[in-house]
Length: 374
Ligand SMILES: C[S@@+](CC[C@H](N)C(=O)[O-])C[C@H]1O[C@@H](n2cnc3c(N)ncnc32)[C@H](O)[C@@H]1O
Image (tube, rainbow, N blue to C red):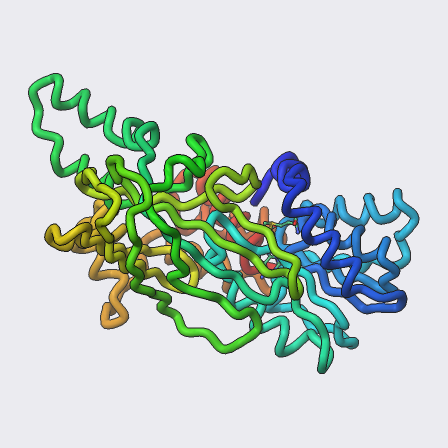
């Protein structure tokens, strides 16, 4: 769940909002039916209403969407905005949209259910010939010298070492991770190579779960490469684009994939880089081969301390049994049949689990109701 303030911060991003505003003005006609997918507090809905939309369906998982209704009323559009609090995957409409507007990205467009939600929305909610916005995202990678960021990653382990301890395992785990650079934004002068497109998303089209690309990055400036930096260029509609390239201060930071060992690079050298991730952007892997040096393979999998047992539990071949909290959740769901209050369900669970604190049981029951109740 986002805070209301974070939606305000998203709206402060003038570059992004200006691009969406222009794309909405170009595509939404008087009388259009619009879906604002991932509406937040409704900035895109208001822009579409101002452009003349007959009706805007604002769909949003976060309760902040109820503020979109208040804002629509305050701005004279109360009768034209329909709020759908929930996931777009569960939304059915009795009319098709002429335009679907969404910005479900994070630092990377491969974020959460972004790609799947757009494909689903196009298939089920968009009228034939309707407009899906954005159209595509191109994802770029370059070598970078992000010294400040690196210092931040390593200083904890340097402290272990100053105390005479070997901290190599923790240092390596820290460097096998995908970071957002929001606290230390990568600037254009931190980039050491050409930037190349390693992957592209075409929204609304069938997609694969794995995304990867290999590119050669000629060095354009000598320096110490300590990371790959990743950004995107979003095409909202035809020539209307925006990008979180280094130096652009948007709400979306960039992704930084640190190199295990910083490498001195000079103009004339080339880095061969492979980036891989899943369509939800949860796990990342990156191989770098710089100027003829041995290839180094890194992955966020190596940055997640995990017991063998917990890894095996996630295997599709695993045959898990339920834990104590799992038993209680199963029983709570059985009892949630529309006839009992949460208090009564908690009483029933407390009676059969005398060793568990009632506060714990109430929290568990509330969480089941929030997640699976209606
Ligand atoms: C980056 S915010 C954008 C908010 C607002 N549209 C804006 O541009 O400022 C993305 C929002 O999409 C919502 N969201 C993501 N996937 C969704 C889905 N499948 N259905 C409904 N809401 C979704 C998130 O909860 C989040 O509030």
